[in-house]
Image 1 (cartoon, helix red, strand yellow):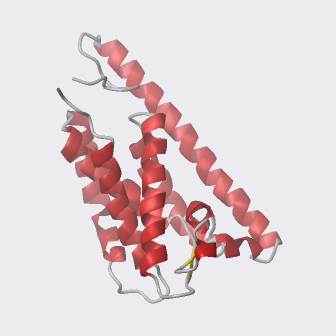
Image 2 (cartoon, rainbow, N blue to C red):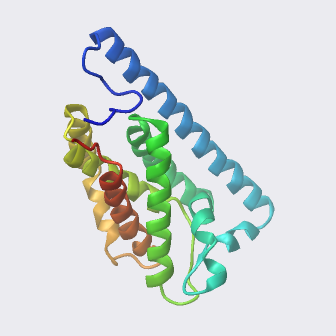
Image 3 (cartoon, rainbow, N blue to C red):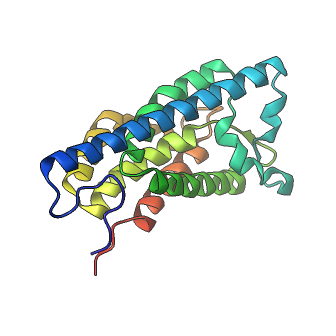
Length: 205
């Protein structure tokens, strides 16, 4: 069996060691998500002062010049209301996604950003500019739920079920039902999360 990774219970560990490792992972994931969301707010403040000039670095569909925006778009928002709507679910779902290890979380985030961003670039109407962290939100949802299915660890299964029950309603956002909202980003973010969970799954020998 492969190494369980940082913050995971290992055979032979005492209950105290397992609890300590889990708490350490939880603290690290909480700090990481607070810093990440705080950085998004700082960027949005700068964008507000600059009269929205940073928004042009989002994903511009079908345009080669818009491809770099795949990496920048999750950190940009169309105003504080947009950012506020993403902040709470991003904090919660990101925390749960990161609790099993920061390295794996960062790898999953990169997969989600790339899959979501490329999906938006290819499928959005031409010249559409897309920004926002909702692709990450949907991606972390898909990642946490699928991680429980692929890894089959008791805690991951429980976390996946809890997240699915609490946030299943966001799946409507992956359908083209709301004008002005990038359902493409939501759908491909969700797909990216499932792909990340499969790529980063625990492998057995």
